[in-house]
Length: 310
Ligand SMILES: Nc1ncnc2c1ncn2[C@@H]1O[C@H](COP(=O)(O)OP(=O)(O)OP(=O)(O)O)[C@@H](O)[C@H]1O
Ligand SMILES: [Mg+2]
Image (cartoon, rainbow, N blue to C red):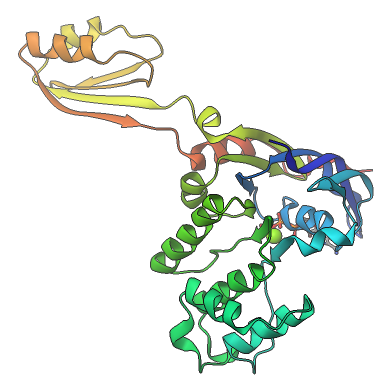
């Protein structure tokens, strides 16, 4: 597999009256492989949209390099095979969904009504054919945006918060559409605050904070370190005192024992011990580390103002 996106020390500096020059994207090194769904995460103001805009050639980097499908950023030819769903899309409001798709298709030099109709069906908007964009709900606007982003059959899609503000059903529909992109062999670079969604659909993620990459890798690797919680009743303090498991926390009150242990420990010996002591196992619950936990522990300890000033 080759890299769909690669950046080397990509940096964007803005000047602010209060803080002087600030690197809002700060020496960013990213590597996104072809065919993967890559989650680009970070708190508000972390530099996600600024990075996407640099990768798309909408704004120029202050320094560093970036490559999209092997082409240096700023090379406009690559736009034939990539697409972009902005975080705040704005469309001509008087157009119907079909008119809008036909209009954007014409920008690629095409007028393929059958294709536009197929895309409307794909995003579940075919039954709203008579509505104009101004009559679209937010979820419908997101869906027409996704249809628009598929007009040129892109190899690589940049989706900036595609599910922001959608209801749970629309979430599921958009998630399925994005998952389908993987089967169609497309690469997806998705920025989102919906971490449970990202956890379900992404192969790899990067978490950025104040313009810097704090974590980057496969979700399976990044989310190692889950816990198992065992709760048992009808036990004595003596039994509880004898529970010795590496890196476990043990609490005991009124015959109720709660043991929280690393996911790679063996819970069987404890469960067997509880049975022998005539106690009752109430629950054995594996708690996988969540992306939300990783996100919070990644960004929480960084003091405000830690962004590099020039
Ligand atoms: N044109 C600009 N001039 C000055 N500062 C800017 C400009 N555009 C963005 N910034 C600043 O750059 C920082 C990063 O903004 P960006 O929009 O990239 O964040 P983001 O990660 O996309 O956030 P969100 O999750 O809220 O969409 C912010 O502090 C923002 O105020
Ligand atoms: Mg943004």
